[in-house]
Length: 539
Ligand code: ADP
Image 1 (cartoon, rainbow, N blue to C red):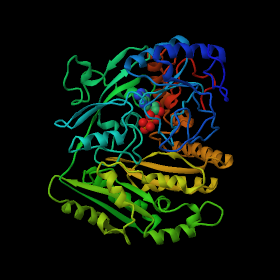
Image 2: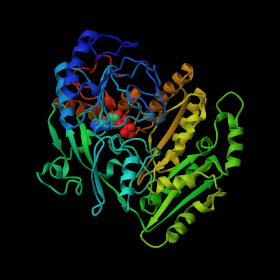
Image 3: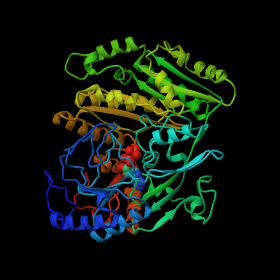
Image 4: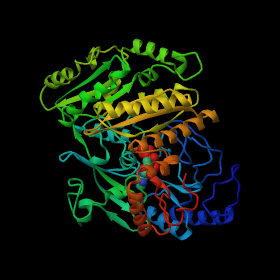
């Protein structure tokens, strides 16, 4: 038993004493190597984006010490993952798998149950196992970041693109599993995955899709395989630990044209959505366009103090001045792609669809000012990583962010209702409102970014309370979130409660059958195994 030496007392797994925990950790060390197990007994350090902690949520909304690991384990290969899972079953210690753990705004690396063992899947298991240029696909391990995949494709002289989310430091696997989005035509990351390899809660190994056929050379070619489609049981879920994932990649198009359309008035939101919908449904807009409020635009060029000296949040009059300065209240950023020599015919269709909105202005990216955001965004639209989006976290001192992210139909009525709802709550709680609508084929992810000062307990608490209120407000109107922070899993799952929580019950039944000891990520998405359910863990 290792001596208890660290300056910080360890967050113990549920029902553990220090002595028993150190004894269990000693066994884990023997299984995967002493150097691959770190007990979290040092002061917690939030780091920053490129040096983020694996021990806890760097953007905490409750106490820094709440969602914290007892130890971090780094498996070297799949057999180690299996060994860890069997160990956890023996010792009844919950595991929290992460790929990279840069899930900032949704919990980072922090485990939902304090004292879980965080499995840092990406530390050693970070190989790009295959790039298939002919079929435009790849097979990756958990630690492959968007940067890594991009560099690999560049080094091979590949004509394939990656699709990166706003920030490229996360993993291709973690982002897809958590159903993150990007901004090329391949923006639905989970929708473009093809085949998983998973360690199940009993330590056994399974492949999904065509991977279940011994010797198949179609694992990354056909998503569905045969029989029940079970891949979804491992996305935003806690039924297994993914060790390999296939992903389709986009062949670079012959031509592309990034564009920005600005809209003069805040009230234009509805008209913009009505014009967007037919274009999306008909598939004219090739990528995932995003419609941003001017405050989010302003946040890329300065912080709150740059624009406003009064006590926050920024008032309507100042917002109007900011909108005048940037040339609009809403900005639609998009990109058109074509296998012909030019996208001009598509540009005409898109431009014409918005001209009836008074004051709107269409710009090709090259026609915008040198420092305009679209000139950076074009990189994300063409599969190149870029960190500019980090800028807006500095809106307030010690800035951190949370996301409220309800799904909305692409209609004036719904977008206006959601925007009004979030604006009112932001005003009540004293926050600036950063709304962006990311437009999919039939819906919009309304990503509402709450930027708060995490060193100010009152501000932090306000952000958390406001997020919970907005989840409830939206639920009453029939809107559910696509993803949420670890602290709000249960609150969001309540919204998905149709017919006496039939959806949750179904998931609990599966969870209990696959994971009778509730080992894997208890509480993920509000799904608790039998050992934890109804015992005071829900938040
Ligand atoms: P990123 O790679 O973008 O930093 P994370 O590694 O934080 O993302 O992963 C996001 C979430 O996805 C995690 O909190 C976890 O719930 C889930 N996840 C990530 N990797 C795995 C994995 N290999 N197996 C199972 N779930 C995973």
